Amino acid sequence: MSGRVFIDKQNPAAYQALVRTSEAVRAVAAEAGLDRTLVELVNLRVSQINGCAFCLHVHTRAALRAGETTQRLGVLPAWRDTELFTATERAALALAEATTSPADLPAQEAAYAGAREVLTDDEISAVIWIAVTINAFNRVSIMSRHPVPAER
Image (cartoon, rainbow, N blue to C red; front, side, top):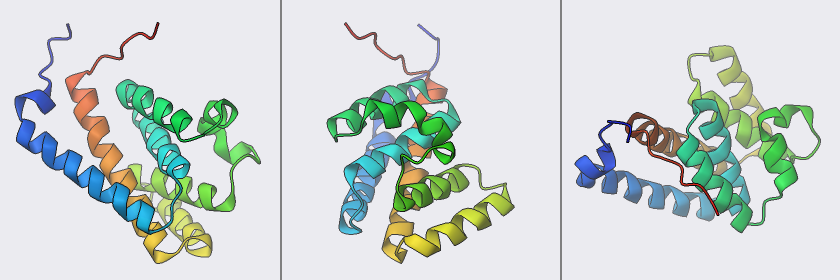
């Protein structure tokens, strides 16, 4: 037991509002034509940056269910150094990183410019919303110190 308050349990109405936001964002992503694997790559990359063990656990499983490969998941922290990701995925990952670390203005501007080259306005908006939402879930899980169950 961590001694932390599970804020999702302490204030379920606020947490359910976040869940509903996530559901709306998932619909926006689908309407924009973003593949489920891309959504999960963004969720994972943001969770890696934030160090959210619980969200990494949840979204690794979701990515595998969506058809993502273990090879790409394994190299995701170094996605820039591989040829395994498409131009669309690279633009989305860079934009998600910039959304997660907005104080780095040069990186933010570069990511947005790169996204403009390959993503539509709907896709850009969806990727940013995905990153914003998973950042919020990361904070809930990190501050609550949600445990990662051992798999058998």
